Length: 378
Image (cartoon, rainbow, N blue to C red):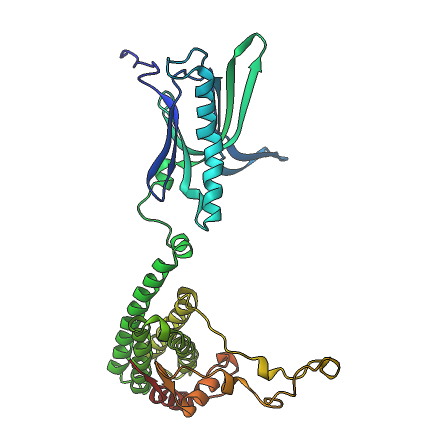
């Protein structure tokens, strides 16, 4: 049997680390120079045992939430620099007050408060975990009036490895970082464009009747996706809106083109994959680009109010009994142009595929009209 390792405070310290995981900055580093008088680490199980006629029945859901409780004192005399109570206040400030304050600051800035992490490090018991301070109690006793005792209860949120990870959650990163989301969506759209071109190549190799039209429409779709990346901010809005509509139409159209039961399985699979890619692109554009939406003045279309006869009000709208939006909300022609025929074909393919009565030939004709009627101006 070997000699037990040293358990002295200097060799097996217990303390806390408060840090900002996002900025990788240590905010506070506390060593408990006087070791806690009590350390309680509770490791529960999520089990429920039920008595049955035959025997006991166990429902087990694995390990439960670990809770840690430490209590002790920071002493009285101190070390000549600070007395014991000053160390107590520093401990509370770092472990409790700062943790709450910094997380609140993160929330007010609209970023993830989980980046502020409190780590409990106990080398004596070989524990290093990220915790939340459930409570921080000050205890005084008349028998020791100069001693301030602490009682800290903590809930374990996970191991350090669960939080210190170079691979950040992509969804959380996208939500909290709009600029990164913009670049990620562009990368994703470039990948979709490449996949679509490859799938069209597969249709051509299979000798499918829809291959030629599919190639024309996918090329136009890819041209719009590339334009989102190339155009300046002032011209990007109409291209984003039009591109989203084209992706939506492509999704609907290729779902319908894959429906006929006589279609070869390989052709049907390629058409459905093209439809799926169009849907991915549509969702990426809708969710990924936080472009500024500008709204024209619609006041003229409302006309006279209910009380106009008594308070002057406004005359009858010049747009009465008409659909005013096409005249008021005109697509910016500086970056993209859409012919009337293409607009009409697009409106027909906005429908739910389940309610469509179009034949495959009719769908292909409309896709060609859309492809030929859209012009991207760079």
